[in-house]
Image (cartoon, rainbow, N blue to C red):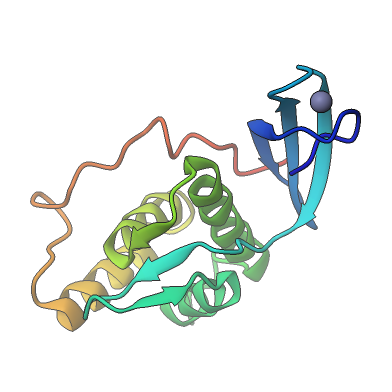
Length: 157
Ligand SMILES: [Zn+2]
């Protein structure tokens, strides 16, 4: 993102998830001025590595719909919660600055967030994941989630 003052490059210092998208605090790497940008959710360039090793563009809608399927018939889980989970994961991924991410990491992130809303839906997601994959196991053998990367607030304060 170009600095609006000098046109230099900027880096993100903070990302917040809002109802409409992402609010980012940025600092210009050239003139050091700070500014805020508002973005519709969307992570251009971020790729997801599928289980077969193929890369596909990250799609927040797809993630949301997967969560919807998992949480079907769970009255405690509202669509807006799932929407927020999907956005939160997207914001975390974008902020990490990575170009690609393994699907298993997204599942881990989703499980962690979903577990706060509805542990049973989270268990269902875990079960689905293990069934489909057959290789990666969640639970004890799951790679530890990095709490520092998953520390975004779920609500816009
Ligand atoms: Zn600048």
